[in-house]
Length: 267
Image (cartoon, rainbow, N blue to C red; front, side, top):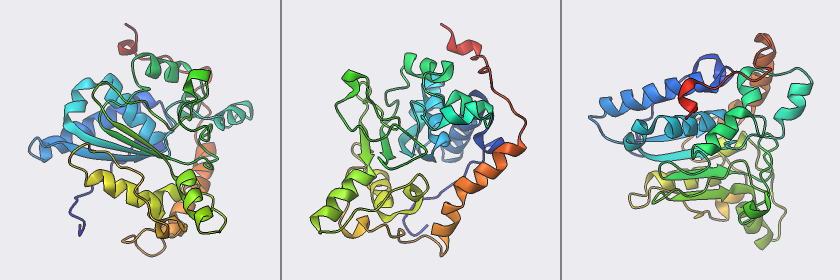
């Protein structure tokens, strides 16, 4: 690539709709394989939505993968589940992975209990207060002591840096400073907006702490598509959620009651 990075896309079976514990095994294999293919060099991981949650599970419960990962960039992650999943369960519109993403599920409780609420490698988590798929996401820093925390935020680990970037709040400040209304940063637009890509590449090019910071300009915050993306990317990304909504009902209803945790989760 012109930016100097060689991407590799990892396709997880069943669109990450089945047991996340199984999906995490694919992620773990991919980490080991790609590191080996890179002559043992560390790799960078960028993952979106449930893919980011799956990556965090892998890094938490497969500690041997951590030394092979230089940085983890999570986009629209629901590390602590999402309120959005609750009505879907009541409406019997769910899969195994969806049930695992209900707040306080056995899966999510185990992730936090074993340290998955903290970054396992240098991590940049990019979220949005106005992401209707991942909620709560609007509290901000400093409210966890009262039990209020954004689903997409991680705490820093011991000697492990983390950067939590609320793309809506950052760009809202830039917009108001220019005297215009802020735009909504949605679950899918986090993938293609210029502001998100500014933070992503800030992380990729940071060879000191390996995390991305809030170095976003006013021009980045106009809701425009990032440079370098193919024409039509905005429309294709906007089709992701409707496409997933159409795919899920075709799968057998599964996951309720929640599937058991694997043996390695139990101390």
